[in-house]
Every structure is written in structure tokens, then in C-alpha cells.
Image (tube, rainbow over all chains, first blue to last red):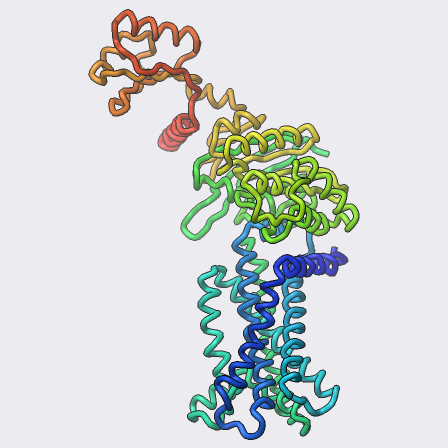
Length: 253
Length: 323
């Protein structure tokens, strides 16, 4: 029956695409929000603490990583909404492939995130940001960002399955801000008090942002940075992917 | 194929401190409508969720359409339809989009899923809904689409072998209720076995060939609607007097079995079981007239679920005490 795994996952992905077609406004707001943040921090709030050189070069990789991190709440919200409606019962009482519900969700979210990255990059280019390092480094940077998003996605699914209530989504929507800002996305940790700088450097999002900065900077990526930006999301996935799958299966207990 | 569509043996399910099902047994013959009647919290929904593979029983054996619901869940899912208490639809999408999606997930294939969606929209009078999202539907329309979705059926694109309806008319207006009832009747003609849970005796009465009364996770009585009503003494007559002070006198003078008459002074009501409806009605009216006792209302009625249920649970408690 696993022959249906692909077609069922595709049917579930198409469901999300149909939602976008139905409510393009929601999709557009989701895409415009990071652009707004970029403009706010790039021009309104002005220069990051402890950042040398052009702030846009520092900010762009940070904003790209931050956008991927904020994807967590979108995933959690969508899964929570599904769980709180009867439709999940109909899916589960159908002979569809195991996991197609979650695979369809992740495919749609990854697609949306890829579009989100593209929009933000185009806006950055329009503002005068110029990534260095050639197409190979560019693709590697995008790959690392999407890998980080994929880890956030499964954390979001797991949180939705554990918490299961719209109130909890609100709590996460608020918490994601300090966690997102407790990173090197907007300011250099060197300029922060010692303990804060340490926390910021340990934030997995900082690892992704640092490696992406290397790759867009054109001076060659530090292998340790690349390693950290790959290992952290993979470690998160190794924990949360099986947890989410198990949690979903345990809905029948 | 066996003549039995559903076999449930000694099923138990516990949530924390609550024993939702406590050794429930049930057998449903193919092509029949079986009513599961009981109050809130009796275990009806838990039973339906186990039968439809959404929930695993803690112990006991459950077979639906010839397959075990735990070990052969996918085989069961290929053969069943489920209408839950809450609409199980994608509210953002339109009716056709919903049905096509469910058809694909039932592995009908893209083309067949489209044909089946059209067929069901036609059958439930939903073709005019067009692209309107389900959240803009009226309650009755939503219920019809939900029912259509639960019939997406099997690989052959016909109605499912077994259909579960969990309180299908709760919250519907009388017209919506009548629509659901007529849909259920038309299904049985096609050979589908239907299990229907309800809190309403009338619904079970209208639709079910047999009824199981469920209380505290067990079946406490089983039979046709007439058999169950006979257990409580059949029809009743209610007399509401103008003057509550005359209730005692009325009990003495009315031609009713004295030991079975119940009196409710707050509502100025006396009530008694009757066997011959018309004879009892005319005798009571005549006796009241002759004695000059003014009555506000005299009415015949069938036993309510409350009465059947109270009667059966009282009996149930008594048997427990003797054991």
C-alpha cells in the first residue's frame, strides 16, 4: 500500500495549494511580513550593535534565518487548526498512506518558505544588497536556510500535536520573538554582555545565520561554521521528527 | 460473506479515571440499521471511534466488514464511512473540492474521484453550491455534504459496506433532520449496514431495525423499538388538572392501574401506562366529566427515552444488587 504514499502526500499538498488559491491575501501577508521587518531593522531602527561594515550585508542573512525560524508558528498554527476540526478524523478513518497528512503539510510549508526566501532576496537585491561568492555558495546558503526551516517545521508539528490548542499557538507566537531576537540575526554577540552573548551563540539560528553570512560574504566559509549550521538542524530533526510521528500515531490511544 | 457486518466482544476502553467502555458486546447483521441509544457519556462516541479505527480498544475483539479494527485497520478503512458529531470537512474548500480530495484519498483515481464527486453532489442536492467554501454553508447543507463525504465509499466507487453515524441529527432543525433520515433510508436499500448513535428514541424508532441501549459503557438492553418500549409498559396517558388538590381524588376515581400511576404535584400532572390507547383515553375523559374534575390537558404519548432509560437502568441496578 506504500505505493500510495506519494500520491496521498501530493493530494494533501494540493489541499494546501488550494487554500492559497482560495485565500491569496493570507499568503501575501505571510510573504510581506519579513520584508517589513527587513525594512524596519534596515532603515527605521538603524545599524546593529557591534557590526562592522555595511549593515545590510550583516542583516540580510540574519533576516533570512529569522524568517525561517518564524515559520515554526505558521506550521504549528496550521496543524493545530486541523487537529481542532473534525476533518482530521475523516483523514484518519480513510485508507490513505500513514504520514501523508504530515508529509503534505511539510511539503506545502517548505514550498511557502522557498517562495518567502525568494521574495526577501529579491527585495534585498533591490535595496542594493549584493551576495558574493558565486552560485555554488548561494545555493549552499539557501540549502542551509531551508534545512533550518525543515527542522523548525517538525518542531512546529510536534508542538501542535502536544499542545493541540489555539491558546498555545498564541503563547508560541509570542515566545518566538525573544528566541528569534536572542540570536546574532540583528546584532553581533560580541557587543552583548557575556552571558547573553553565550546564549546567543548557542542559538541554533545563530549557527545558520553565521554560515549563511560566510557564504554570502564571498571570503570562503569557515568549515566549523558550515558544520555547525548542518549539524544543529539535523540534531533537532533527529529528536523532533520521530517524536512528532509517534505522537501522531498515538492519537489512536 | 458472513451475515454479520460487525462483531464486538468484551470491549473495554479507559480514559484516565473514566471507564468509557466496560465490556461491551454488539452484533450487527449485514444490511440492517442498528441504533445505539444512550445518554451523554454512555460510551456511544467511544464505541464509534473504535469501530471506525480512530481509537484502539484496551481489550476485547472488534471486527468490521470481516476485518479486525486493530490489526487490519486499512482493510476496515477501505470499507467504511464515518459521519462524526462535528462536520469533518475542509471548511476553506468548496463542496466539490472536498469530495474530490476524499475520493483521491480513497484511491479512486483522479477521474473516478471527479465522477463520484459529481454523483454525490447530485444525490444530495448540492450541485448549486458551486465554488462556495464550506464555511459559508447552512447547517443542513454542511451536514448533507458531510454525509456525502462519508459515502465516498470503497475502491469501486459505490457506497461503503458499513456506515457509522454518530448522532447525525444533533443540532439540526426538523427539516435537516428529515433530510438526514431520508438519506439513511435510501442507503439501506443499497445494502449498506448502518450503525447510528442517538439520544433520541424517536430517531432510533424511525430508522433502526434493532436498538442497543448503552449505559456506563455496557449494553443493558437490546431489541426492536417495539420490544424496548414494551419493557417500559408501552404508551402512557398524561392528565393535567386545574386544581392540584384534586390529584389524590383523581387517582382514586380514574380507571387506571393504581399502582402504576405517578403523580407530579408541581406540574399538576398524573401519568400512567396504558395498553389500549383509545379506550383508555375515552374512559379517562368520561370519568373526569362525570366526577366534575376540571382537566387542563389529557394526552396520550409514547414513552420517552428518559422513561425507557430510567426503567432499564433501574432494572440494571436491581440485577446488580441481586448478584
